[in-house]
Amino acid sequence: MCGRTCLTLDPQELECCCKYRKTAESKPKHPRYRNEFNCGKKYQPSCNVAPTDVTPVLVSAIHFDETADAADRLLVPMMWGMVPRWHKGDYRKHGLTTNNCRLEGLASSKLYGPPLAAGHRCVILCEGFYEWQTVRPMKSSERPVFYVHMPQDEKVKVEDRATWDLADGHFKLLRMAGLFDVWNDENGDKLYSYTVITFETKGQFAEIHHRSPAILESDEQVTDWLDYKRVPSKRALNMLQPCHDMRWYRISNIVNNSRNKSDQCNKPLQSLKQDGTSPKATPKSKLMQSWLIVKKRKLDETNAGEASDSKDNVKPISDSQPLEKKPKTDQNVQKNNETDTKQ
View 1: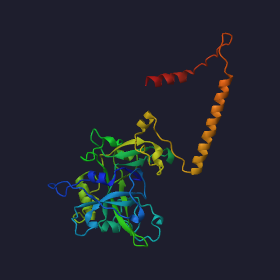
View 2: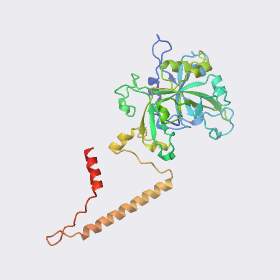
View 3: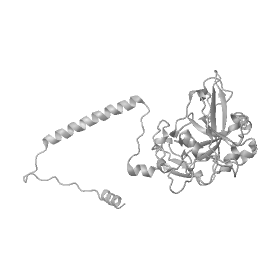
View 4: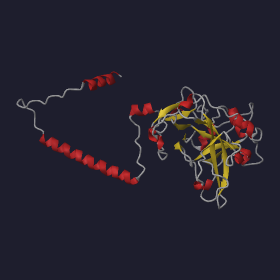
């Protein structure tokens, strides 16, 4: 399953990361970024991309130009969460959960079958996706969160953009197979939207979640998935296999709130604890935020007043004044402190 992703690259950077060859002998090409109105929704790079956000996806150029070569590619911004083509009214109120679609029964689905038959296959791009561990019973707020990404070169750190060499293509994006469709509003404006294909998890990732996205590991897989003229849908679906080369690490639960776009979202939990920069969750309610600010101000004033009173009442220590006895330290606490010091 895939419910949140990370994509911080701008369109030009994405073009550099998505270079491709039409044939083994041809020179590398950049996919052209084609902007779309999408009912006013725009792509915003983010560390915490959620359904209904817009991100660029790869598609065959022939979808937008019948004279184009089906092997040519475009980068097109589309909304995450497919809007049914038959839906009337506000596109946000179709009432269906369409950010993911199951591979099982995909071809016969009334919602996803027609886009599949029309060759509306796309590749969703991200630097990584977030996954909550759901295979163990626990409260939603307490579930461990992991950041999943593709293996990188030795000098490249996924959480540190300063180590990425985008020009030479050393940073490897995570590419997921998906479907897209086109919805028209009452004014005739088009909205392009997509869904991520998922299937039953196999391998070590099954310890985190029972479903995972269909990841395209090689350039050949990406080429075959996009070129619907050459590769029919049945063959394309059969080539989707579980990815065994994913990497992941645990992160902070600050990503739970989709409105939190902090660049700390995909930082390893261990590093956040070490440098003390782990951000606190921001209250959703503005009223709650105001209440907390007022409460903190009153608490600070109270502490300041107590400190002032204490300072005025302090008497210098003389020989006639006995020193306060130092309280005995609990042996267990002292033992723990010694252990922490050794570490």
